[in-house]
Length: 205
Image (cartoon, rainbow, N blue to C red; front, side):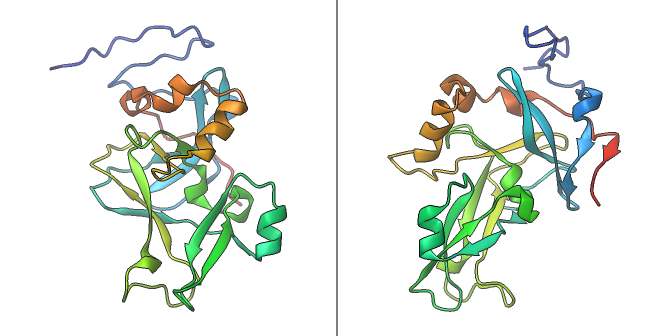
């Protein structure tokens, strides 16, 4: 079925939601914060708020590695005391029987951490801890968690991931709802229909 390229005003400061015509962000948010050859961090609109997000520079193929989840490694005491929303547990490549905690806050230049949350049903990317696979490891890192495409993703699309990774408790989702994000926005596939223009300003130092 051919989808219409006509847009309608969604009532949120005139942000149009359409399929084929790319959206240019407002000047204040039309910036590249961080990037690699496949994806870049910029801004997206969820509900009434413009927040950081992750977007494709080119089309991605199913299973393609996008970026590593990197950051500061925390001790158990530091992890217990941390208020960071970017903590992720990973296999320790030095001893696969052990686990370490990564604080993947974007301030540590963690490109993968810019991906916003979506429930697994509508997420277009996923995390894989390659340290769980025997014979697969990073020679220079203690962890090897990667963000990868779940299916073909066109250029200019936003990437969203289930940080709860299928957990029944879904703590990350509940945390976002507690912060005022509507559950409908976390479950909606509409973000996959929007194409974004590459920003006109690059903030990378």
